[in-house]
Length: 498
Ligand SMILES: [Zn+2]
Image 1: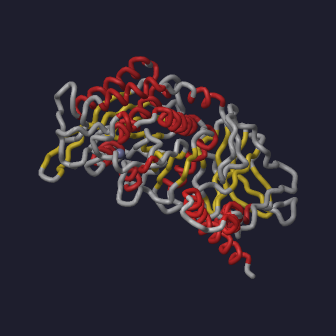
Image 2: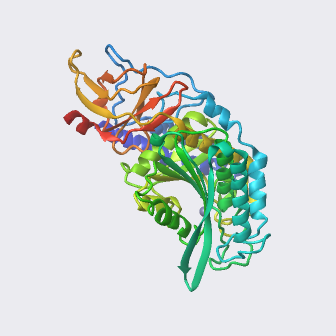
Image 3: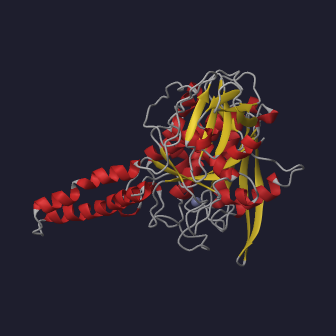
């Protein structure tokens, strides 16, 4: 019998038996059935076993792990703190920079709460709400955000932070909308460091899309994302960074993401030459672990990125996922195979449409009874959850902001001194402590395997496992243990042909 068929059978059985068991147990516990206990036991006992098997069996052969040769050898990396069960894809990688862990410890819940309560107190931040009321409406929100970024700028005069508002004007039905993005640019120290954009929309919407008067507190959607944005900006301002960081509070996401479209078109693309960013992280709806029907998921954080699986957005998302997995053991980051939830949109799409890599972070569960309604108030926030995902996001931003630049892959050729093995070579870099080689099969959302290569003066790896994968990417690790930018993912077949 073909192994694949057997595996499928086991998986199906496991999937079918689990709900059946829940039903049987429920019926049993209410004692409304005469189903003999033995029958229930016989039906249910194999379910967990089959479910476990369904999760573990695979038709794919395991990756060849042993490296049967001389130099350099993929080594187990140093231990990560805090420890966790490694997620699929990074089981073999543990380079961690203590400085990033220290940054994560700086996240403060009182600052997050201050942002949440200040923004929700404006009652609505709808794009058609008041522009000049100091207490209520989107104008008050704009002024408050500008004041927060100004405060960060004044506290760190040596960072040369530039804070400004960008006008956003558009037609929406019969309305002419005039609003503003608020932008803070933290110039990087290294011309080769590139630009990372971190964004979150500050406008809100209620049940009626065109109602600028009724309450639309938008605590979770998206004062939570803005609170995280400000907190990350606040902490990243404490020290200089290699990359330029651009923090943007977008207007008009709820009216067709007009704010982010204007930012890409009138700012990034309007420069000569256009600003080439390394990637954009969208923070939208990060404040609640609750779903409908009292479901709770305090660990999961979803990451959406544009298809296909080979897109620059997906490759960027994999780097964000790697950072979260390395540094935030209390967050379960789940990569999604789509750019958005079905029928929804987010500001990251304004970037990917223009050819920029982007990805969106959003909480694991959603409660449709609270979204876009007066019920999206502070009761809809679990501060512990927001703290956790803010720390995880900060780790990703910090890793992207300061690691070494991407190494340049060379080729994969038959090894000169180890018959039957292949040698992957890259351009050596100075001042680095090692390299990560990330390998992936075509359909995998995550890296399937990551090899750590030391020492830093290595420029090749001879191995018999390359043929088990389809694409490869390489990053350098600095002396502090920080992983840098990954090279573009290259097909292993094309590297062999070089
Ligand atoms: Zn939103």
